[in-house]
Length: 329
Ligand code: AVJ
Image (tube, rainbow, N blue to C red):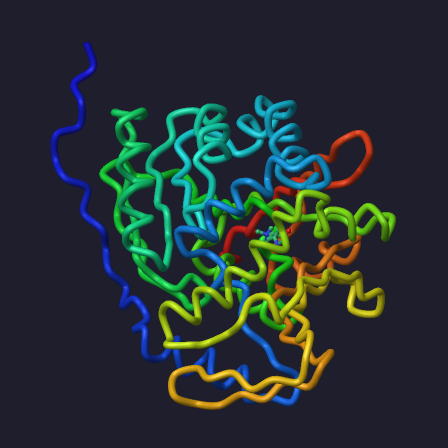
């Protein structure tokens, strides 16, 4: 009988950001002529629940398609990555995807989830350790957009595999996406690899439908951001005076999510006043879409070499494997 892992899982702390610098980031975004709040603030308890609901919507193809690709090509992914990899997940996101990956890898050396939310990390790490008693789980509390220190697994890994599913890379502006890929390149180390989910350019209507679902869950998800500002930063946003909008910006190659002011109004937040004209909006998310060439060019700039691309039959979504070349001797 396998013994349950008794020891508490220790979380390596790589300086989590304080609430106050997050508050400053939010306020400065709202002071701009083009008002902006980063999509990373969507994910409080309620926001995470709403996102989970989004992933099951008929219009929202990415999650289901990515899971389908990973399931179908699991054996191939496992073979190409090779034995005894240490998996470093950027953002401890989905319980389901990491399990699919761990199940296809041979003799995984360790699992290193890196996340900015301590509570979520702890929950995910324990859930996983309970189901994989032989796996060493080494969570790191850190902002993964900045280089962080990797813990040392007991088993010496043959390579590091950075895992970044969900096309979360699409949330970053091109320059930031490149900077993030460079951090991944650094953490993967020479001889390491990157397995990344990348959403693809496609028919505009299909894209816009995915962010304008008929049940209005995406609208709730977007508006929940204002509720969060009310609850956590002393705001007085009237949610009925803002509406959700998601449109594809062709020149940017991205879905943009907006919260559109329905009236001329002034809102208070953290003891500061913010004025909105009717029709003025806060941009809350960019979700960039890529061609295979677009993404290869970006990854090459970060020093990665593409090894394989897997797609669904309709070519809606891709899972891509890249290598960090061995250091020149
Ligand atoms: C979590 C960034 C992959 O961009 O599709 C879903 C977030 N926003 N519906 C995406 C999201 C609105 C999602 N990612």
